[in-house]
Image 1 (tube, rainbow, N blue to C red):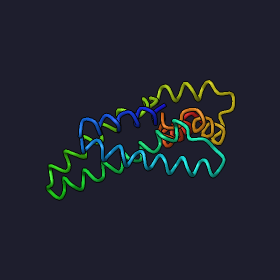
Image 2 (tube, rainbow, N blue to C red; image 1 turned 90 degrees about the vertical axis):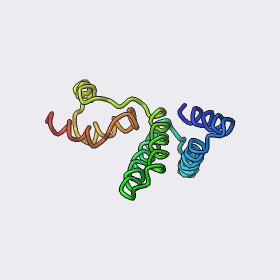
Image 3 (cartoon, rainbow, N blue to C red; image 1 turned 180 degrees about the horizontal axis):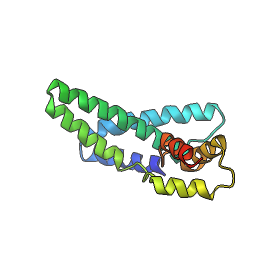
Image 4 (cartoon, rainbow, N blue to C red; image 1 turned 120 degrees about the vertical axis):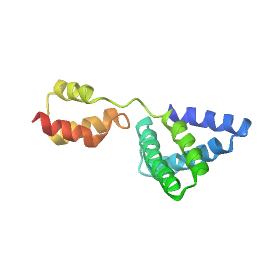
Length: 141
């Protein structure tokens, strides 16, 4: 599970006194814990797909932050953020390609938009861009 790997990496960053990685893992683990609490209150379990979604969102936020540091001329902080982005990307699942998404859609009996979107959300959450799935689906119809 991705969460277990993140916890192990957090412990390693503490042991190696890597403050950049430690700060990142602390934030990520806190975000994941909050999501886990919200899921539990709703009667659901946290899945790898949920964790992957959190990591994808964190990557987008870090990219924006890095860009802002570049604009401000703070290259040192931008480099730290770049390192954090690389660390997060190590834990993200491999994203499905357009061809893989097309073949999955073509293998489904029901190709209606609600069914396909629900299918991808349940089975490939975090491993595909849902916007891309929607665009491909519209192109196939």
